[in-house]
Length: 243
Image (cartoon, rainbow, N blue to C red):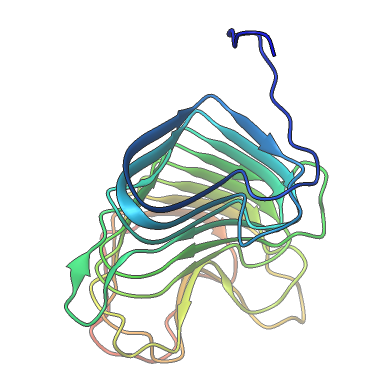
């Protein structure tokens, strides 16, 4: 093989996962295009480890989840583009029993659909103390982002054109977890969210089924479905200073 240069192209066609990481530290994958993977848990599966980063990467055209982060710490995505994949991201990590944060992150990323109109997307924030910040999320037929666990920070994101094929749900949804306290949603811009006539109402940010203890502050909602914030039961909710 020839030496790698900035113009080199590496391709794995319909093969196994690109990377499975279990216990490694201080790894950085930069400026890669990862596509065409049809086997394994995810194209990039971070089972455990710390300080593992995908930076400036594009993950696309995958029939498996793009990135799954489990028990890692200080690991995540930075300035990546993800589109046309079955599941965008599972951002986990942290100890629920001890409320120890994972400090994992997705920052400055772009999540969308280009051609695969049948994929719901699915951005899942799980565990404790993870960060979803400064991301652009748009053009998904259903409920794209779900949050569970404790002490997550969802801030400075823009979400639009979400949920145009379903009733119920929200652009950002959490539900059926009375113990899921401490999650903060702030400085987000949610706009042009669909609410289909005669379908069950939808919300912009939607704590459902006794989900509790959320703080929803200083967000901007414009044409954000049936209710900008839709709370269905639950205690300890703080909603203030939103526009």
